[in-house]
Length: 392
Ligand code: GMT
Image 1 (cartoon, rainbow, N blue to C red):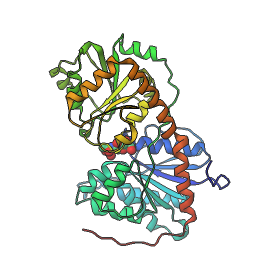
Image 2: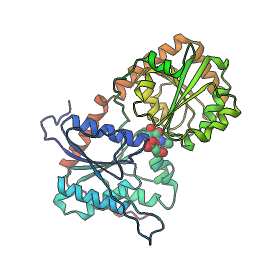
Image 3: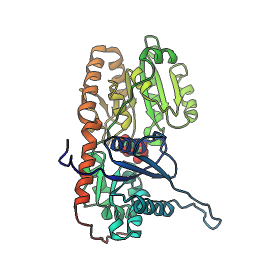
């Protein structure tokens, strides 16, 4: 229970990417959880976020309509988004506009706020998720705009301490940032573990899970290379829950002789069924600010072998809730996977700890009140004084 239990429910605007990806999942789940706690939540995006229920109390979706004009070689999203944000803030008296992923959402929110009279202006919260700092922050065409939008926001949060430090380092951003970890709210799987394993054709093999959008940073090449070095090869099967087409990786699967080891399911929404069926998961990413998929597995007592990069060590406690390996070392990753396949006692111990740590540190009960507290603090604070910061 926070200190503001008697305060009125809030009206919150949320903007995120609606497609499969951790930032959209976190933003959508946050909105659902806030609505369940009595707040009114307005999603503003070009499409309905894929995990957003069609009909739920106090949840609204406002699509941003984008027209195409012959003059524009590149369609613009930022301006129609900012206009829709301003319209929704005005019409629904939004208290807090919470944007997930800085580009272009934070810039659009600042612009929306500028369009509104003082008594209609929302507080703006920008949550950085990863490549908005680590990739786009380094791009001279984006960095200064991201820096400006963060400086103008009423609050900036990051999903890990790693990302906070990277934002200081890469963007030279000196303002206050709060670390609020990602969270996950698992739903009850519709089928049993046994049914799902039967569907996947798993006998006595260990089922290794990899769930991602397959972007280059996930290093699927390393994932497959690692598995090709695991012995004996009959001891495991890999299930890829792919948020994109897996086809481009099939030639690596064939080249490495893994055809009978790899099972692919694309664009699964009810991931819980598969999470509960897995014995361990494997992530060979070259960069992750957090890696939500690791956490999703942990809730189902699925320990990971993962690269020791970015925010991953804040999610996995090495040797306690999973195993960390140096990035890019396929041999060491394969040995760690073999260890967990062969040593069932160790696997079970890590599984138990993973489940406990997920619930203790990364549950909605632990995390949502941190956002609510932040929102309450902001709406009690005086309006921000505009700052100028051109660093080009
Ligand atoms: O930043 C991205 O590349 C996309 C983003 C996403 O929407 O999936 O991923 C980031 O945000 C997730 C949710 O906070 C984190 O779990 C991911 O680690 C992070 N990705 C990177 O840092 C590469």
